[in-house]
Image (cartoon, rainbow, N blue to C red; front, side, top):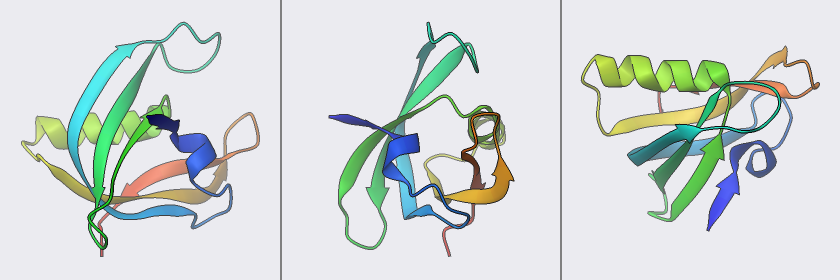
Length: 101
């Protein structure tokens, strides 16, 4: 099933998915009362174990980074989704895409 990225990655600076390859992406409108008007469901493959997962996220900065990479022709996307030291209004550490290694 689809897991929420917010709940799947520990809410601490440096908390991460580990190195993954994003190989499928679905974008849809969000009826959630706050945050971005859309969210993404991404299928990823763990680059160390080969395990596959699906995550949903409405994280605005993360979505912007993914769209920027797509615009540059980067697909599939190999990255590490990692929490930074900055927090959102809800007190959760923000996500950022980093190189996988």
